[in-house]
Image (cartoon, rainbow, N blue to C red; front, side):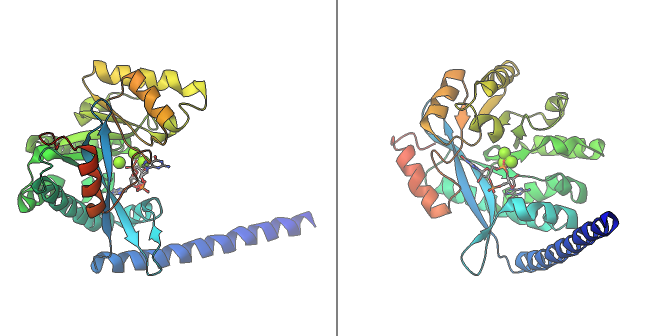
Length: 285
Ligand code: C2E
Ligand code: MG
Ligand code: MG
Ligand code: MG
């Protein structure tokens, strides 16, 4: 009987695995088609300077709208796009679209606004990323200093020489780097040097619990102090309430991002939002 149960359990997982593979295959087919037919959108989430309250930059986040009006979250399709290599083409589209949007927003009068783009390590493996970025900046007539690339620590696993060369070339263009989801990767801090980053984005998992448990406050405090002594700017991800905002201000965090101000929104809604936030006439940064 025990043996039978064992076998049944095994069959159950087996069937489930098959179903998972079918689901993945279907998703992959739809992903391929959506890339071909330009079925993606970028939405933009503002980053707020905690001292001035102004929106200083926006992060481009991929959205995949569906027939029924729903959206598939990037958390669901980015890993698949990475495994299949489709992220290269999709990522190139993101870079180009974000640069054009950045230029449009600057032309609206937000002349200091910066645009941030997320990059996957796979994009560094398959392409000359610096050429893609350089061409996108040129096509959009966006200055390199207006573009920030958000990278995660996972970038420095594996063939680091190739990646280091590309990071150097990108840096030469004048774009800047932010370390995304900081605190969730490896404790090896030497990558801070390799990235030549200007900004640390403190992962949402530390921010969300800041006013709930006492535990994470010393950690966030330490990250902010370390960043300051390294000359790096800090951005807190996932601020959802006023209490958390106040704590972060008190800890000396530079910028914040989160649902407290806004989720990622379409470009027209973003323009309205920036106008509300940065309403001092000569200060439309
Ligand atoms: P990320 O770069 O760390 O982006 C922040 C994520 O946190 C976004 O999720 C954003 O919507 C969400 N978020 C922001 N504020 C809050 C908040 O206050 N509360 C909560 N609960 N969530 C908040 P999203 O848009 O689903 O993106 C998930 C991840 O997918 C991103 O994490 C990024 O790693 C990846 N991703 C998104 N767009 C792209 C892209 O164009 N290229 C690549 N390679 N990855 C992307
Ligand atoms: Mg990001
Ligand atoms: Mg992040
Ligand atoms: Mg993240």
